[in-house]
Amino acid sequence: CAVNILCRCTLCITQTPSVVLERKRTAYLRCKQNNGHENMFWYRQNPRQGQGLQFLFFFQYQEERERAANFSHFKANRAQDDVLYLNISSVEPEDSAVYFCATSPYTALQSHLLSLQKPLLFLVFLQPGRES
Image (cartoon, rainbow, N blue to C red):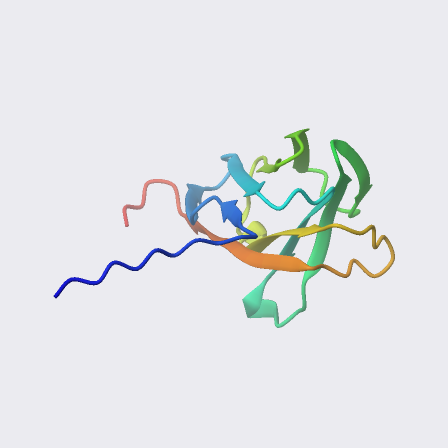
């Protein structure tokens, strides 16, 4: 007896898998949504520091509306309404974190309340010349 199960998500966020990099390289992260939300966000959380989510970027359609201070080597780009990119140049061990992409149909500048969020990845760094 064979059973076929079809799983389909109605509101989906498709994201870059985990990334392992050496120091000083660039991380390229991608988040794609199918829910038509006008607002997209990047957050991160460092589990080792026991902190909550840390806001990085807020885009409304293709326009950057807000960004966190002290992340000058982080750049975000939303060239299409359904895709948001995050590039982290010259990565360092402090950039190791779980990165979250989120979407919302509503603008929530002050509270950043979200209708959908999903963990993206954990960056891990290798020492140059060291093999895993």
